[in-house]
Length: 217
Image (cartoon, rainbow, N blue to C red; front, side):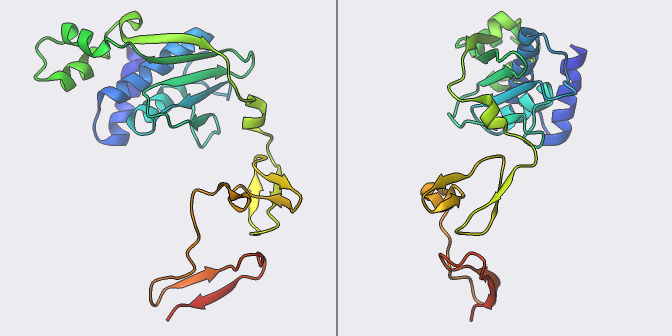
């Protein structure tokens, strides 16, 4: 409980509030550590986490497990689910953990005096046994963890846009080395028209290294 409370205090400081999903994130991380027999908070990068939603739950997982985007030990696979998979990078073993389907109902028994369901869950999730709160399943990854993590220091340049690509995320084609955006896998589209009186850098397609400053009038 001391470890749980320390994590919740940290989350409360980060978010300026505490919610049931933050508690779930910490509890999920703590159960994963027991499953893999890893001491928390981890001081190395042995445990790698996949979270299936962003927001409070993801921060709970990070605070509880020590897996962070900045440490390259956390990845978002946005399924819109309050769930996470934790991989032991030394053994390759993986466990996926999500809330028990009846956890919200069971929470009422642990906090009968709570003013509403939200507060009942907030209180109950801190004390409910793992077996009533969570479901853990051994899983196998359908992606190579070594390729996902990559190697430090690798860098190439996209032949089309001229931007650096790290962590082996390039796409190699007959045109040469491309970033995923230039290979047609972008999540954005470049707009060449900027608001009035705003400086911007304009790069024409196929002229990656010829960058000029333009003031739009």
